[in-house]
Length: 279
Image 1: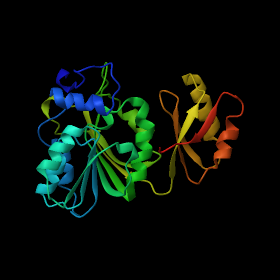
Image 2 (image 1 turned 30 degrees about the horizontal axis):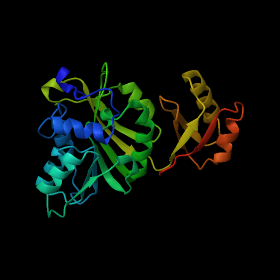
Image 3 (image 1 turned 90 degrees about the horizontal axis):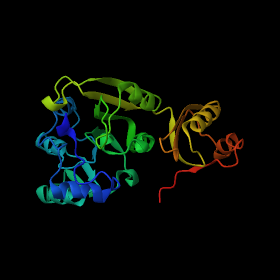
Image 4 (image 1 turned 45 degrees about the horizontal axis):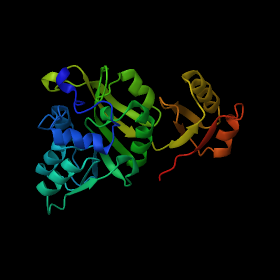
């Protein structure tokens, strides 16, 4: 499975726009299949409304968008943080009104989409950003919107890519999304055979998903205590603190006043919680 690794230029630099651009410049994009992944092709073939709005985050060379265009889809948006693939796509699809190509940070993107296609984006972001991923996906999807794609069903010694397990993914997503399908992909390319999960999640519209900034937490035991204290607040169904203890996502059936969250943390003066800043 070594050909799945993309981190060749340097594993020490931050995984940001410069990191990904350096991968494209050095042509160390071993995650790039050169074509659409078969499970995604099969999924796209099931979409009957070709005017539905579709987003592909971390699009890279976006063979998925190319396949969508070739099959008559008319409302496609792709976004990537690295300049090189965006420039190539812009040139390739110049004057095509059916696709919008954006260079930018997915986590500051705004819009509403009927479907978001996940392909080697979740596994490319550091694990401490997974709570933010959950929040952002829920925010960007329209009512009854679908998030579909592939997750790795294995772990890696270092990343990217960063892996995980079906149990981890279910724990993260099941309160904000209705899990319609999550199973070993039957038709992955050979190097990824039996190591990919194909999934379809439908946005739950009876819950609210909010992201908060957390300060003062330094260990997993402290984080677990905070999660338990916030979970008992009326209306809260999920509390998940990220792995560097700086962000927390809360899924609830109703709006939870920030004062209630702050009051729950008063037992330790070093802790504070505030709404996530979009700046």
